[in-house]
Length: 266
Length: 286
Image (cartoon, rainbow over the protein chains, first blue to last red):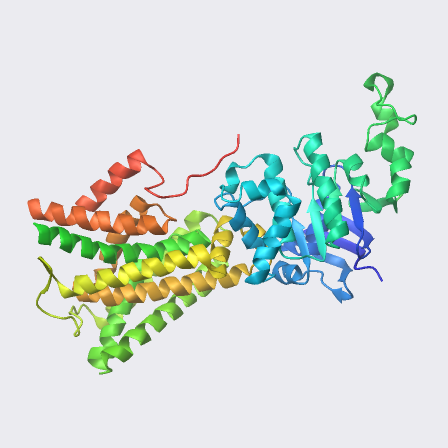
């Protein structure tokens, strides 16, 4: 049985605005799953529905079910969902800007407890992100974008999650940093046995490590396949990676946008 | 002259403690609790009720008042503030202002316009080294410093303190890390309420307990708070001592300046440092 299972999940904001129209997806234990889609497709809403943080934005799961390790968690309290082992890394590098790097990490250890483990967990995070160790007493607000992204991932790791929901870790970062962070996510998945569900616009980076991928458009899953197959899928290559069939970057001169809009069957 | 300075410094300790009650709530829930002054007043009256009218001993009365302070803080948060969370800052400010009038009304309703000095206030003067001090002020100062140290340690080293800071910084991040935001609110209002009780006891020893005591407490607490920075614990301490000192100096040279001087100092400091002496500057990324 999969670790996380969404069945026909429907989400409305303020009881009126229908954002997810029956999303079903699964995350197997120990796997990395990518959820791809364009702006406004419902990616972040899907993650918030899982973590319970929908509530702070006046949203609710109005139909379908979300099961984590066999227990129904839809519309649960975000705090108690976090305690069950689902940690969401929020979009936009939400560091606690006035706290130091180490205080940020200690805040992440809130669930896991403190004492002897705290030291060991800090060392574990510093092992993945050596740059954070050098900056441990700096105020987090003055870190660079890449360092802040590392900090929020490290903070999420401090609570020993079973499943990490990573929202747009690549947003606004240089390609080399994106690659570095995704490499570390891969190591975290393999070494700490943390399952990862990541939401991405950067399909290339996400599919490089995803075992399985879903494409969401207009609040519906329109395509799902293994990471391997999606990497080779012509539509994905064209619409999400900007490559033509032969694998070259294509020129806009050759494209007639309006004719080439993809109609998904979903 | 030396005695005046020392006296000012000691009274400054009480002012600092008043301001700490504001800071604690502001730090975790971003609410400026204007009812804090009246909370102090009503707890002072309640202590008087317990000791002078019900006839309980001082040592039973003080813990009882501190516990009622915590309970009152908790109730205020639960009934008046929590339903408004997420509303604009101004709505919450109006709510606490309303609460302050309500508490004042209760004081007048129950105790009329009686004024009194708490019965256990030690009389006379103490001589500490070369200085003569008023006992009530000296005791208050020691208590204020002790509470300041406790609070600093709480925020810097404990998990509860850290969770309060996280909640203040970002509710959503706090929730995403499994921190129970509502519980943290209740806790900080309860602690703030018990501070108000301690202030009530101390202020009752230094000042006379009158129906305007709440305004007085607010009038001292607010300049200290703005001077030190709304969310800074060391700021509240330093601000309290500074205001206590300049007030004492002012009234030494020109009696009648006492009530004006704190506001003048606050005005000047805010013009130079709008976030107070120790307040957090907002970190903007460009």
